[in-house]
Length: 305
Image (cartoon, rainbow, N blue to C red):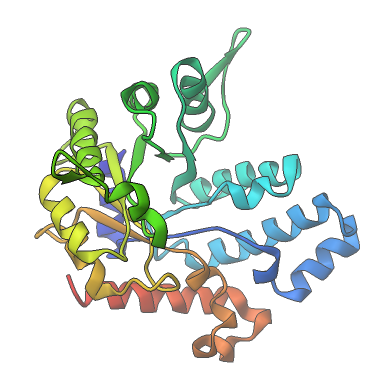
């Protein structure tokens, strides 16, 4: 799976993924109004607005990016109707040739962890049928419970030829409350990195493992250390743009071959039309604004590689 991602990155020359994290406040009024006219101001109406918003953006950027990263919480807030649109969005993106990183940050132990893995990147047996739940290509995983919590995901990853991105050093301001704490003289995030390398050792797909790591762009010196500790681990890099991370900050996430990382941007792309820089497109052409924002992001990142 990681080789498929690398191939798409090389084809598009775009080491990025677009975070499909829709909030109703991001969606232009003409889209929500049409959805509410049909379904009312209901969960169904909100879900329809999200679907139309997602579809317009995907249609405008699918030929210039390798992947998308829908954050499941943005869909869960609208209950079952939202989750239906999450699944529909995943399938539509895959139809458009995009790899989908499901950002669900799941993590538990035993049969619960295995069930999460089955739901998101595996298959479930129903009678004589083998069916797919959400069917994403990659999944983000929380390692707080240790190997007991991660191994079921790794097992499904191997069985299904799927990928994982394990949280190592996240981009949020308070991440250091736990992740930077010293244990035996080393910060916790380094110990987690060691385990990610261990978990990924028998999931190699060429030069890189199908078990990747989430490493935030907002801590460049730490990403430099982690890159050395995990030379064969692909990084999913949040924190670029709206969270303050710059292209210069994230260059340490990449290897000398220009590979090794894929950078996410969510509201900086999907709500680009709200930025002064892209105001000329207007709300009616929000998809075109998103496309231009992708082009600008790719140019910015490639300028430091």
